[in-house]
Amino acid sequence: MASIEGTILDFKRLDQLARGGTPLHRIDARAKVLVALVFILSVVSFDRYALTALFPFLLYPAVVLALGNLPADYFVKKVALFLPFALAVGMLNPLFDREVMVRLGPFDISGGWVSCASIVVRAILTISAALLLVGVTGFPEICRALERLGVPQTFAVQLLFLYRYIFVLTEEGARSSRARELRSFGGKGLGIRSYGSLVGHLLLRTWMRADRIHMAMLARGFTGQFHALQPSRFGGRELLYLLGWSALFVVLRLRNVPDLLGSLVTGALG
Image (cartoon, rainbow, N blue to C red; front, side, top):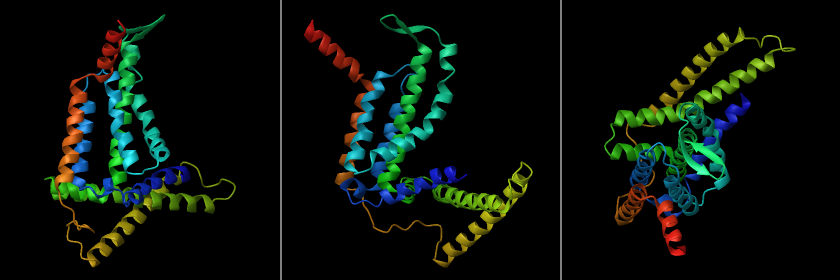
């Protein structure tokens, strides 16, 4: 439980990184949300066998990491946490799709392996884009941007509460688990029967904690509206950021740049 708690609570660092002072952090959140959305739609819209065409999209996370002055090792570890889920989705593809698509010398690579690799690369790209968006924007600002872009306010508020209460539930669960272990003697009382009581106490503690948080929010004047610490506006810088990245994503989606470069090189050598 301690490792799960540490892993989940470590995601709080994303909000700390979002308080950076780089020019990328100061761009209006709506532009960054729209760019990330265009990026994800471009990546997931490829054919299931597309693989080489996805690699040029690595340019976007690399540039955001550099411009946002973000720790690359931290994001690599976080993306790696989700890769087992992507492998679980594509691991059966080689069994059902055995048609040979690529020949590398004596090795024949079936379409199932290509589609499995494509799923993993898409997962890396989309998850890294989502994490980097939070890292340079902050989740509250993303929810506020969604509301200003026309998303229903109720949905945006619920999304923000879901994000916040995941950490509340994790903290209460870790505290209850630690108390259960300290009260046992020689491993007694740690059996499966104790989990029913643990879950019940966890539900009650989380409910009471959420009630206290809600009362504190009402005492501070919360009326369901988002209030930004610093007002922002969608200006020329944001428009240039949005159009520049979107145009690049459309070009990369319509043209297979690695194949094009390969054709140019082989044509020049021929």
